Image (cartoon, rainbow, N blue to C red; front, side):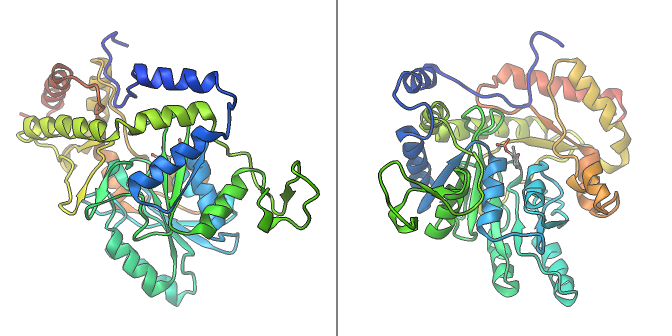
Length: 393
Ligand SMILES: *Cc1c(COP(=O)(O)O)cnc(C)c1O
């Protein structure tokens, strides 16, 4: 790989972040202490949620969210095929059946019209979902108002997978306020908008859901007086249910708090870099990511599409970028085509819009510290690759 390799995404860690982690490391708590509580409160304040529960990954948060909403083996959970596998796996952890709703061809998000059609059919077959998990792909909110209206009509819960979308807005409020959902989940994996190394957070307006998730993140135990059958002393806790160890550490929370200070700046810079790509790439025969007017994306990704008639050239163009040191990546392999999901009965052809999108897409490097000259290099190498492979004459 070239030494001046430009990845598709990369974290930004400054001296404040380092100092924050070092100070947590020398404090009295290394895990589940005051920094975790402070980080939860800071996220809740930022997105205007009543409750926030910090855990060790977004995958854990999605699992806890499904459990809090009572998902069991008798239930169906629906999500988008154009997502990371975790959005579907969380339902499988509960033993539930998974199904998918194809995407909108412009936003690449779960399509509310397809959702409406599928719900009408599922109602006749008595197979309505208990939970729908819309994924805010690339940081742009799904059409939550429409999805929420359907949830009122058909009676399902909503978990927003906002792993890409912290700091993004929908209709002038931050994603995570759960105005149109029950629970919202963020990821702090290094490639996402802000990082804690590994980490995740669930926000909700429901005290009951928050409590359920918190209990299940710590082995199903509680020390709250209201939950205890007896109270022999201060050492005492009770386990009433089977939970997990999904705790976040103080080191992670300290890093998260420090990163959160920079969130708006991170996103503003992504918008500047995004605008540069839009402007310089608009003359090329590729599809650029469309931005909805009722939202302000966190801009996690910059996915481009090769024209349908040149879809076979995608691999060669991808390889050309990679060998020139441009760390392009494909987001996402449709979840239903994974061998695990094929074993559950899905196949190629089931969700044609997500599949067509997958065959034509690649994401260009987009992160806080990308420089103008790095972006120029991406544009010039992409242009050259499109020429060499007959997409641009
Ligand atoms: C990254 C990601 C996850 C999982 O996040 P982790 O924190 O790595 O568990 C879930 N859903 C989507 C859409 C993601 O991109």
